[in-house]
Image (cartoon, rainbow over all chains, first blue to last red; front, side, top):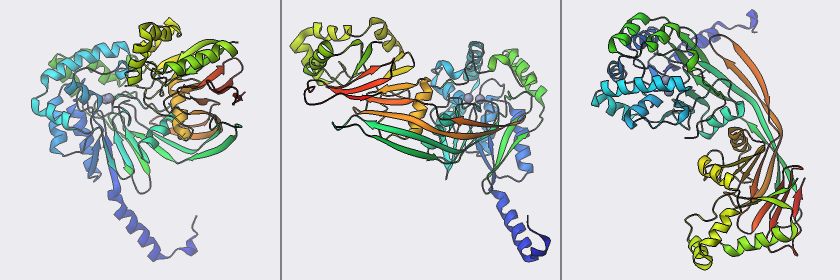
Length: 298
Length: 196
Ligand SMILES: [Zn+2]
Ligand SMILES: [Zn+2]
């Protein structure tokens, strides 16, 4: 703590100026819009209100929700850099996802219904846009993906094995990994890691000698943006994150929107009413991953 | 408990296979032979094996493996799980994942975690090695909308073992965890390399 007598007014001014200049370094990350226009509009308004100009989207623009073309159009209008989500991939490639794309069998059956409806509704232009999306986006040491760097379908759950989580970030050459797909926002910091190994070689022929070494692991972060259009963290509010690159601070934002507007649109569109039910509750037990340690091997 | 013989990379080399078989017949107490890939694949020497010895030789090779395991291999694609061991050609990430003594320990730990096994036997690199995770840990802090959780995780005592290729093969005793790196046909010159 700096004592009052040490303070130089000029220094205070410099600090404040630096802080103000640093503000634009904040950027917003959104994910899993799932054809929910009202939720997307609310989130974009919240971001605009804070004067944040840089937005990155982690995919899943469509699926479950009733306005797939409208959501694609809005993302394109706003020129938001976007990577491809599991739904975006499946809509353009057909349902070739592995078994673990859905967290349960019930979720899978409902997912297939939503898939069929969405594929019928999407314009050729929207499909072409989804097909053009990259698997990942990179800005310096920040990496943006939908599921994990391995696959749009792999879940990086908040409590997955810490070394496996760090491996995903490290192998991708990133310091901070932004992901979505779980529909539950979180910030995970992995620090002070080390692994000691003893190596014994069977070659060349001769007496085996053991060699010990230690790997010190770097500090890495995983930031999950949650979901704009299909929240499953326990209430109906869309979530997204604001990251300040300079100080590394992350704010998980949660805000209300006109959920009934989307629920009526779901029913009017003839989509399974369960999707409206889920939006109104923000959670569904059937959507819980059956096996949190499961790793997609696709 | 009887031991396992782990071989790979024969690529249709019948002489190497016969040398290993002779080795196993005469000296070693082995109850299961695991073939971790590259035995009869599309390699060119495979045809040589077929031509010189006929389909019977290929069948004999296949019969050395428990039919149940063969079915499992075909279904799993990745390999066998026996006790707490994964027996794979590459790794749990991919069949062509080449793990060697210089692979990053973080990568090795990840491959072990993916299969949730204590021993991962791999053949892809063709090297014979044993890498034992002996210690370490990591701090994890998770914050979500409800709470902040802090967790300390230790490195589990697990191992990745390279079994070699061709005449260089490995014996493993799952009861005692003893490992022998061998080279078929060169017994008089070379003592087995054992690690308990
Ligand atoms: Zn999603
Ligand atoms: Zn997804």
